[in-house]
Length: 214
Image (cartoon, rainbow, N blue to C red; front, side):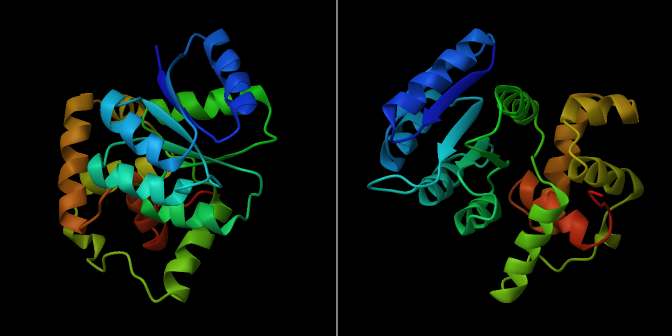
């Protein structure tokens, strides 16, 4: 059962999400009305997935996401936004959010996104990845510059599959290795490339031509 934390300042919207998720066999373990509550609940409950609204009082979704990921780099956050090109979405993804879902998305899209992220995937499409990479460049921020030549063939393949959206389980099946081995290899890859999370790793792989999302 996937455990979900809902973060949105509109109670009616949260209630609708709760009903939908519970009807799909998921468990809503908490609801937060602002970013500060989200940080506290996330630290206390360690949900499998956090659905995080971007615009909220007291502390917005981007800053809350950054704080949650500083506490728990493995937290899986999906941003909820009204607009696909929302500038805040870029900042959240750069910080390590697994992707975003539009508020007007249909139920099937949302449920699929939650299940994919719970399985370890990142919801990065080609346009979003390119926009975030452009944003790094425009602000003269850089992903680590270590060349992927430092990775061996197996590590490069794991990084490629990660960037293409495969979960740890799928990577393990494709490469005929255990999920534990995948997790260990990913940890080694992050260390070698000075990366903090799967989202940064996916962006790095796309930038370096290891993988593409087209």
